[in-house]
Image (cartoon, rainbow, N blue to C red; front, side):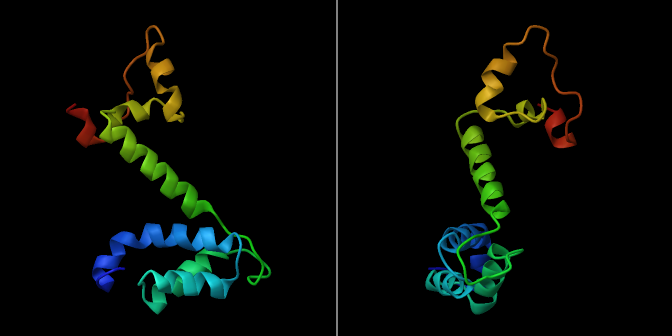
Length: 123
């Protein structure tokens, strides 16, 4: 359960994941009801259902627009990487899979990433 509309804002990404999971097997109204069960207000539940069914001709059938889920999954992977001692600047070598980073770092002559945000340049 969420406490207030302001507090619930930090749970919005999770509400999107809930909506997408429900959308894979349910309708627009099923998504709306599911999100409401978790304590989100009607406006948030409507927006989640709308985003989950975006681009589908028949919102009553199973199926979902899953981009928000993919972003959330990636976000969680990065948090886990950092939690276990990973360095954010290592992710600037290029578009790489986190699992490949140990192999990439073994490349002879590999230079540190050239373009980094200012807040990472001090590391």
